[in-house]
Image (cartoon, rainbow, N blue to C red; front, top):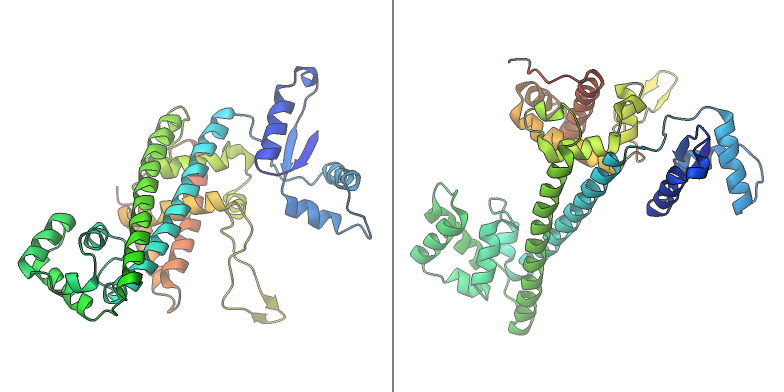
Length: 349
């Protein structure tokens, strides 16, 4: 039995070497990649242990000897490893894209605060980006010919029910915006151009990764794509992190692994009404479950009903709470479909 703490790419290389080492082939080797938090908590049971490599190795070995090891055996199927590399790369690109969109929104507020504050205008939509590229200053936009602006918006947006009304609203927002000094405005335009180029490059990277994920995903048998709205990419993100579903004893263990579990605050007869989601768990799995739940609730009547029910139960953080609970419901479905290797049958189907 071999144990080591999870250390991202450094531990991965060591595990690959241990698995491929022919001299260890005569042993029934099991490799456990342990959660550093669990090892640290186990070490706290000992008093006054120093911090050095020998002691750390002793604690890990004793943790393995103790016997109560979660079924966190390192996934030996390299197909999951290959898929996980792609899905995690996609996660990182999406995070970078989100940060870049926020950066662009900040520049938008500087250049045209009225548009940035208008809730009916999306800050990073294709139309907004096209407007910022077309008009150098907020005055150029505020004084634009209404017919030309309407035609421009209709071409770039394509989905507006009333392009003329939208054009008029944009001009009004531009007129209500703060004005920047010319020098500052020029700098904002340059920074905006860089931000727009970055967003487009990141969006292309997402498309490239999506194709690679779908190609890699085809060699892994699964039934998750039978769920309406989940798609190959989200299914791949979930399966890449879960690996063989037999690693988990129940849907509750999957939820805990993903971090979709809420703490309890209770003392005597008091039970806290509001509880927080735990901060530990696999952030990649949690992300793909949340994104999948957000998509499924739009396509499946049962999940839509459940989301709406949870949404209207509270007045604060409605979407975040309802989405997290919907993702928790999705965990039960994912576990059962993978465990039984069966297709999803909608309740009304």
